[in-house]
Length: 302
Image (cartoon, rainbow, N blue to C red; front, side, top):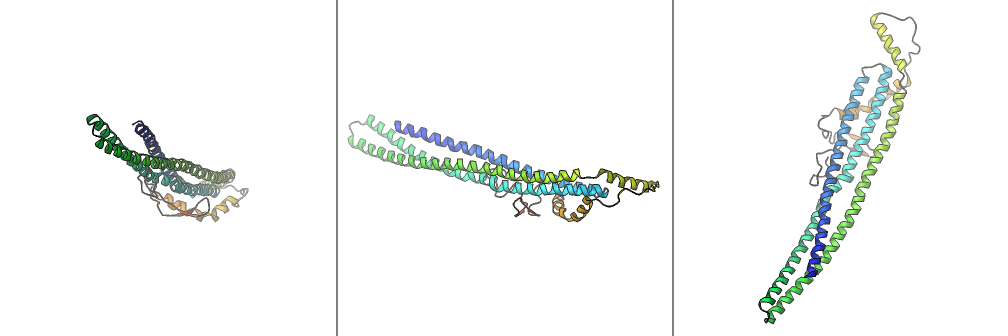
C-alpha cells in the first residue's frame, strides 16, 4: 500500500507540472498576441502621420516641402520594418505558443490513463483486505485475489515508467521551447530597433539640414508680392537647395505607405494582403493581420 501512495504522490507532481505549463504558456500566448496587435496599431498610426506630413508638406514652400517629404519617407521606411516585426512575432512566437495546447492535452491524457490503472490496483488491494477479514480460511479465494493484485501492480508499475518518460520528455521540450520562443522574441526586437535606429538617424540628419533662412526668404518674397510691397533687391540665392531636388526625385517612393495609411484607422487589420514591402532581410513580405490572441485562435492571425 505504501508503494501505491508513493506513486500517487509522484503523479500529483507530474500533474502539477503540466497544469503550471498550461497556465503560464496560455498567459504568455495571450500577452504576446496583444503585444503584436498593439505593434500593428502603432504601425497604422504612424502611416497616418506619414500621410499628414505629406499633405502638410504639399502646402508649404519648396524648402520645407522637401524636408518634410524626406522625413516622411524615412518614417514610412520604419513602418515597413515594423510590419516585418509584426509578421515575425506572429510566425516565430505567437503561433508556436498557440500550438502548445495540443502537447499539453496529450500529456494530460497520459496522466489520466495512469490514474485509471492505479485506481484498479487500489480496488484489487481493497478487495483482498476485505476477503482476508471476512473469510480468512478460504485460501483459494485469497490466492486468486492475490494474483489479481499482483497483476494490477505490474500494470501500474509499467504504466508509471511510461508516464515518467512522457512527462520527462514534455518537461525537456517545454524548457527548450521556452528558450527558443523568447530568444526569437529578443532577436526580432533587436533587428527592428537596429534598422529603425539607422533610419531615424537619417531622418534626424534630414531635419538638421533644413535651411530655415532660405524658407523665410521665399515666404517674405511671397508676402511682398501679395501685398504689393516689392523689394528691388534680388534674393541672395534663388536656386533650389539639394534637398528640394532630392525630394522631387523621390516623390514616387511613398505611394505604398500612403495607400496603407488610407485604410480605416480604427481597423488595424484592414490592410490584410493589400500591399507588399521589403523586410529587413530583403525578402518580399505581405501585410498579414488578424484578431487572435489565445491558445485556441486560428493560425496566422493577429
